[in-house]
Every structure is written in C-alpha cells, then in structure tokens.
Length: 589
Image (cartoon, rainbow, N blue to C red):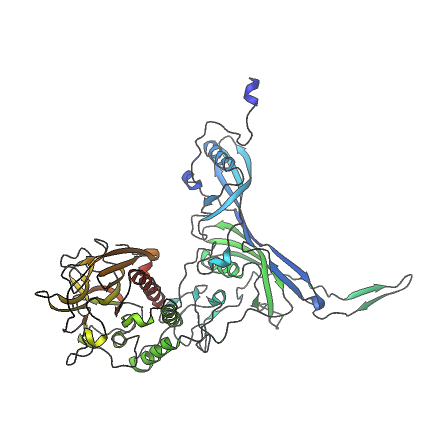
C-alpha cells in the first residue's frame, strides 16, 4: 500500500494514453476564455516627459492564452495528463478557437486548474504562454491574427475593417518599411485609384480609427513639481513641458470576428512598442501618438468578442514614416510608363512593386543579359504583346487575337484562342535575330488550371530530319508533362502529370535543364544531355492557339545554366504571384 505513494509527481494520473497533439482530443475552449498580449519592453523617462522605449528581443510580444474547457471526467483526465506530460517546457501546438480568429500557435503550459462542478461536470482551465513568436520578422503573415495577406487591388469590393497591403508612397516611390504598408478599410466600397490608400479620397487608413464603447473615461494628471518649505507653505512649479500627457484605456464590447481580427492585426503589427496616430473620438481635437503595450481579448459568444486596449501616449508625437525616395527600378518604370501611356492599363501599387523587384533581382543574380523576351499576359490584351525587357520597341503581333480583357488580375484566361508571333506576321523575328542558337536558348511560362492537352507555349519548328531544327516548350502530344527540346527530337520532360506551375527550360551546350516551381515556391528540377541540331529559321509563336488555362507570363532566354534555370524560375514565381497570379501559391495539380 505504501509503495503506491512513491512516484514521480511529474504526472498525477495513471492509465491514460496521452495523445501526441492537443488537437487529438477534439476539445474546444468555451466562451469566457481569454488571451492577453503584452509587449516586453524597457523604457526610461527623460526631460519634458519624453521617453525611450526599447523592445527587449525579437520575441518581445508575448501572449497568454487562458483557455477553459467544460468536460466530463474522462476528458478532464485526458487534458490534465496531456498538460502534465509536457512538463512545463515542451511546446504545444494548439488552435485557440474553432472560429478562425487566430492561427495555430505554439506555447507552453505552466499552469492549470480544475473546478469540480459536480459528478460529471468539470472545468479545466489552463494557461498557455506563447513567448517565442518573432512577430516582426514574420511581417507579411504575422503569428497570431488569422488575417490572410492580400495586396490592394483595383475594382475590388472591400468591407469595413478589411486589411490590405499597399507598398507605394503617394509619389509612386516604394516604401521599403514593409511594416508600415498595411492599411485598414474605413468603410464599405469598391476600390478605385481615387479611393486607394494614397488616392485623393482614400477609404483606407493607418491610424487607430476603431471607436470604443460609450462611457470611456480617462484620468489626466497635471505633472507639476511640488516643493514643501519646512514649517511653511508648499509651492508648485512648472519645470517640464508635456505636463498633461495622458494614457487611454478602451473597451470594445460585442464586436464581430471581422472587426476583432482587423484590430488584432493592427496591434500585432505594432509589436507592443511601435507608435501610431490616434484621434480621440470626442472632446479632444488635437491628434495624439500612442503605442499599445497590452491588450486582452475575451470570447463571449458566436461572432461576439470583447477587447480591452491600453494606450500610452508618446508626447514626442512622431510615428514611423515611409522610407521616401526609393524609386522603382528604372527598367521597370520604363515598362510601366509604356503600358500606362499606350496600352490603356494602370498598374496597382503591388504590381509595380513586383515588376520592380523582378528587375532588381535579375540584376542581383546576374540574369539581366540572359533575358531575351518577357511577356506578361495578365493586365490586358494590348499589354500582353509588349516585351517587358525592351518595352519601347515595336510590339509583337497577335496572329489569333483573344477576346479583349482588361481586368488586370495578373493572369489571362485563354481557351485555345490566343497565338502571337515574335516580330510580325510579315516580318517574323527568328532565333538568329534574337541572338540565340539551338544550343544556347531557353523558354518559360507560368500557368494554373491548365487543360491536359498538346499545347505549344513557346515554339519554333522547321524540321526534324535530316537535322533537328526547333526550340519548343510545350505540353507533349499526350499531355502528360510540360517538356522542352532544342535542336533535338527528344523532349526533356518536367514532372509527369503536372501541368501547373512556373516552368523554365534551357539548353546550354549539350546540357538541357527544366525547373518547375510548384506550390510554396518548391522547385522540381530535371537535367539531361541534349546535343546536335541546328537553329530554326521559322517564326517563333507564343501560346500557339492551343493554350487553355490561366497564364501570366511567357518568355525566351539565352545561355542559362541549370542553376540559373532554377534561380530564374523562382524569380518568375515571385513576379507572377506579386502581380496577382496567387493561385500559383497553392496549386500542385
């Protein structure tokens, strides 16, 4: 009997199979659960009540999830055993709610409590601390608020509290301070240039514009100095400016999940220490600058939440500004100007950024001279035949012109109805005129939802015998792979039965390479020998009149090695996703 008393108190329940993940218990926290966010900062006050504020680490924003579970005795044992088994130091992945307010996060359990309500009714409350989330390093997607990243787009319906990324300043220079490029929708609208984040009548703001509950109260202490003369009177002195600086504490009751996620995104983006502008809704008519070191969310009911926010005023009154003067890449600007002036399409800020980043990346990787032709199909029909690399030159010519489109989605949907010739029908530009040969050439394209069929994305073919004279990037005759050949009748095939993705193929000497970039920017590479052949003197066609699917780019390259082929594929993926072909991020058909 006494031996049963001698055991390691790391665990207090026996006979329970502990699951690998908390989610394996299929239990959801109940309403009344809370999460408290707090910035771990160091600050000190200087003259005139100015202060320096320093986050103590890249993990300075932490969260404490206080979750409650209403369970029977069996599940109470399961929860207790799971939490004890993590020993207060092993990370626990968990979804705080099933409503999608938060992402799946990872924290440690350092405390739990059991409320024995009755025979088969128990409340298990636990504290899960998330203190290893480098929020500001994950600037694009964040760690907590489940708000999908989206670029601002023209002609799009937006709702109040939507969040969008817009990377340009009002003078069309790039704001390199990416954290300051998120905007919050101030009202329902359909987007246009005029109501864009930097438009004449913007429907977006970077200020803390959320209106709190009625009944907010503040307390302003006038911070004068007081001197007590011994056995005599007291005298008040003004020795500092900013004597009436004051903080604010706001409560937001019964707000929707949509508004809550917008506010959580705003506050997480500020990291518990970054300043922002705020206009107090009434009485005070002078703008303020605050930072928010802590906030608490309580789940109250379905699509109903309470949020308390603590704001501290910074009397210096300075907020982070855009990094001015970072102009678009000059080659990108030339292309953008030509399209906007002559092709009738106006780019969005994110599209301009993506094109500029692409040109900069080409230069960084030493690939600028390797680009012979680049076409971007996803803006409108007129721009789709303009060479991105040499945009002031005469455009290439449609042989079979697709129906007009001008939605600027970043991709075009072709239905075996588009065919373009390099140069013109009367005077086509052949391989030698482009400076490429059968053993020093390449091609690329990007597409999703591609039909399984024989399709010639970029192709010139003169003959296969007695000498192979061709350069082709296409789905082969049976449609089982995207394949490439140059000066050789044998195709180099990419991943079998995969028609979607970014495909870049090249021949360099007697070596041929093809890279497919699939979802999440993962590369699939194939390399093999490819020799012989000669140049084709036939016209070069793009899209072939037999392309069906959503396509964003195609092009021709010169002299890429296998490593450069993979590098270029990644850069094209970034470009196409950046201009709007976001289906590339998730496809893997």
